[in-house]
Image 1 (spheres, rainbow, N blue to C red):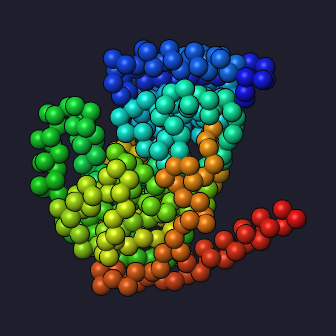
Image 2: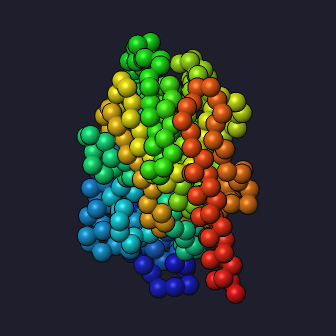
Image 3: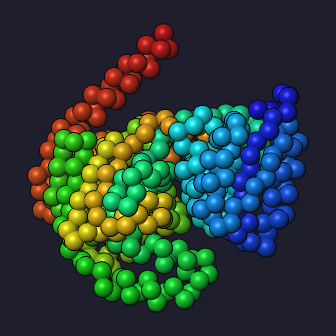
Length: 354
């Protein structure tokens, strides 16, 4: 998809309320003009409120578009992804929001003209996509992270505060004060490893960054078919909030109490029932079953390693089962099985190169 090829038509879904709303018209004009110079003619659709992005994206699939471009913040991009999930559409991203974690994870430039040039260049990657099932939602796609516990309860109010709705500070404070500090959680990973733990938070991440560039999963890969799972046993409410404050702005903070795992499926049961949120969208309370759909989404993106996502060569070794006194009944099967998977994948790659 370059200026040397014949012109193509794409659907551009934009949220006029994303980022600084007063700048939205000029940014949109810049994007449309830049794409046109590369031979990409766009049909613009305005998505306000944000959830309309999913409806418009689904319509674009039915209308036969091969390229859909999401222009806005992470919420808008995530909503578009939910609309095209399961199709053969290629996603283009023009970051124009408050946080832009998706663009930062993938290395997509926040500069509009550079993002358009990346789309026009035509290089794509097939990326993993998560699906979560709860009592309220049978199938909810997410791209970044699902949280169970404290941050899932706080995020809706905190996000509003970040966007300038200071009246939600009172609600966030009330949630924080009354939050139960010692829920019991059972995690079952890949139907093999079961962990019983007392913790107020579990995160299941597909991308390295989430929520104002918090480095929630420093070694996350979007192409390995695995979630990076973090458990926070022994953390007080203040320590959880402090941890995320310290990991903001892409900072890597070591904490010996934090437990990390990798798995392609995870079932999380909690007592009492905890809040579940995927990419900042509340999915109710209770049991969550989260599954990975490997290579389910094609995106115009630079090579791995251009953003916060690490290449396989740069990733740390497999997380080892925790030996923390806060965690019981940890089996070692998961790490051995993952090692076998990686060995098979390397052998297959070597054979394909021969």
